[in-house]
Image (cartoon, rainbow, N blue to C red; front, side, top):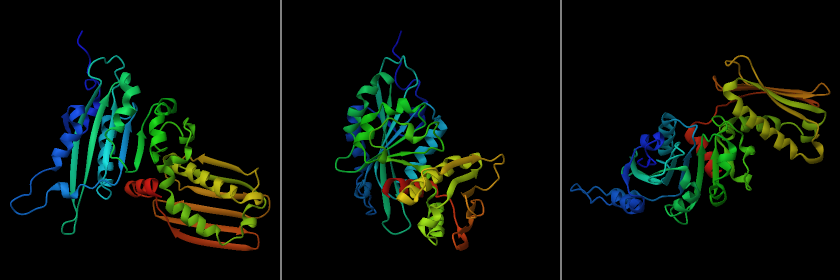
Length: 337
């Protein structure tokens, strides 16, 4: 029986754009793509705009579909129009019996012409298809293709379990940051068995930046001891579509209140409740043993938050413009801040 190649059952690898080249020739072939001679009109060659600022490893799991992969790849390319980089895309084959060609690759490059004269940015991608029997060699192989002395970021996408993802320990140890999106994954980031959890940034959390800023600004009007005194619970009721973001918001509030030291009660309950209606706006409540209260209605569809509270001797109300960050801005927040 003929060997099954890495590409034959690898729909994601086949769906991503690029020119197939031998793995050993990938870097030379990529360099040749940039070395176009200047045109007769004196236009500068693309190589003059090729100035990578980072490496970005995009690792697809078995729960990703071909459509998911193409959409995410295009989204990442759009983001790196602002931040030129080298993208390494990893596409495993679902065929566990594949015994032929173990690792295959293709190369892709794109230049984006901006609005200003001479404004251009370029990024490049090396896309690898591999079989599971090659997994043990993958991390060493990939290190050859990273641009040295540049920061490296890792985005594993739609893995079927945290246990399988946790097997790629080198990627977690050797990169500067790891990006996950708990809104699309079947597991929470804290279920991963990795030693440096501080490297992991959840895009669902980063999308809540404007919400956290508004809530923090509102509560800054009250003394910290009054906020935590007699506080019984912090809860948010949310539609299912915003569950990941509201869980991230509750975790942030837990961390902030925990930093209040001896003023914070360890008996505060934190809860994210799902509403029956997907059209309902998220609602955040602080409940107290006394007559204090805080109520925050987050109307993301209209872009307005209504915040009301009576804490201690002070009562405050505030309206604030809020939104979830767009994909590009959330990724920038996860990578750089």
